Length: 93
Image 1 (cartoon, rainbow, N blue to C red):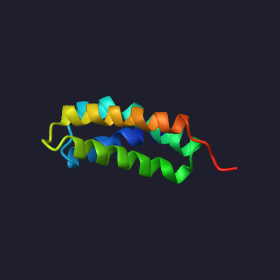
Image 2 (tube, rainbow, N blue to C red):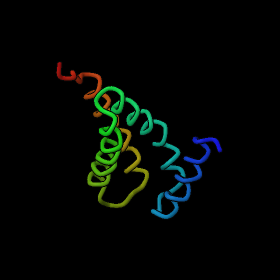
Image 3 (cartoon, helix red, strand yellow):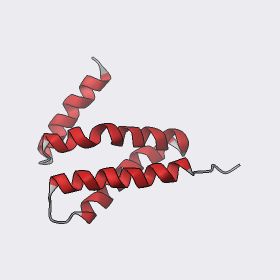
């Protein structure tokens, strides 16, 4: 099976289970995948998944009213912040 198709299928089921609107996932999926990739390759592989988690946590804390559209916008804003950190990251020599 195509890994991307399986990921999409999984994310659809998971999003539904977590009560997330489909449009929210559609809006943040590609930027978040890009962030995880950039952190994994630019900082350290295990940091990718944890960075994605922290972006989601920060977005959730910044939008306590439960508005999914606002949360999606906050995820995108947090991704920009992390992208800037990754761009300036200097690995120890």
